Length: 125
Image 1 (tube, one colour):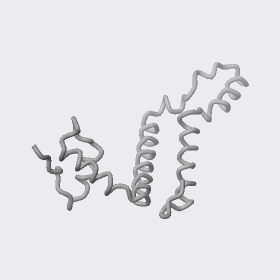
Image 2: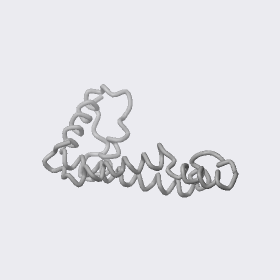
Image 3: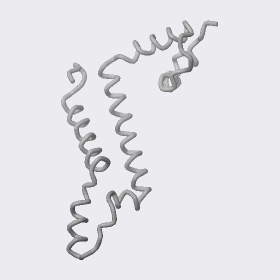
């Protein structure tokens, strides 16, 4: 991706997040080690993703961490791209024309996070 305000470090950071998700979520990186150790001891390894299954707090902390990182990355991307004002205008126009059947929850959250924007956007009836 090439955006003037989007540095190469941000691309590396996104790749690191993807690799971390691959390591923990898609693949059980501890499985080969556990399988070898249990085989040497003569036991059944007892399934996959055992660490995550036995530690729900760890799962929650990992999920929270990834959510915070993705939120920060998303804000950085929106700031670099500069598309938020355009999308806000489009959302406001759709509300004014009453073409939406239900509110766009994410955009309502964005609008509520900026105190200088009218909340809620006015709707023509």
